[in-house]
Amino acid sequence: MKKKIFLISIIILITITAIIGILLINKVKVLEYENNDYSFSYDTTWNLVLEDKEPVLTHKKSKAVIKVKTKELTNNFIDMDLSDIIIDITYLVEQQNPEYKLISSQEDPSDRYDSFSFLYEYDNEQALVYIYKKDTKLVIVYYTADSSYYDIVLDSVDSILGTLVIKNQV
Figure 1 (tube, rainbow, N blue to C red):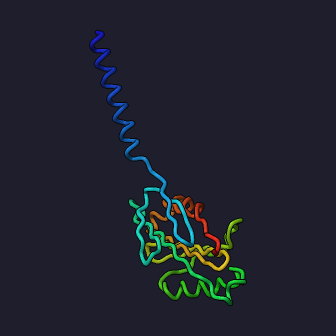
Figure 2: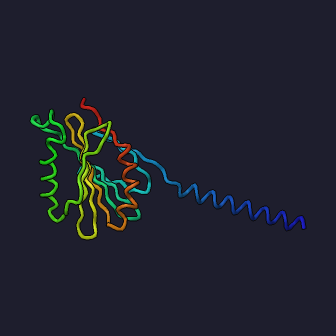
Figure 3: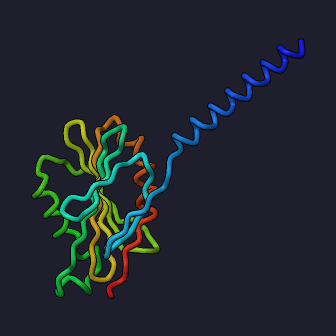
């Protein structure tokens, strides 16, 4: 009887150790991206590559994509509020993506930056464009996903954007 209890205890201990090992191996880690203009954190459910020196994140399961681009404002736009130049920016975005239909747009309340967001739709895809302004910089974030994954991955996108830090001019 004692042998059976001992054997069962060993089996339970090995099973618990295996489960803990599997959980530790699959643990999602938080990584950092930083360049001269901004930084942000993202988790390992995203793959990061650089395209033209700008980060592109691709979600491993849904294949959703986040692209981050930086634009330096020219002298005639530096002192303007983002709300004053947003028409020019959205015109350029829509010229580059004429097949997308604007669903909604709004000024985003933020203590950190002037920002706007625009939601577009095309066929079975949704695209969310965030535009942030700080000093002489615009940071434009494009999030695109298949409509079936858009809402599911949006929380992860919001978490990434919540860590966005636009750096001061040097």
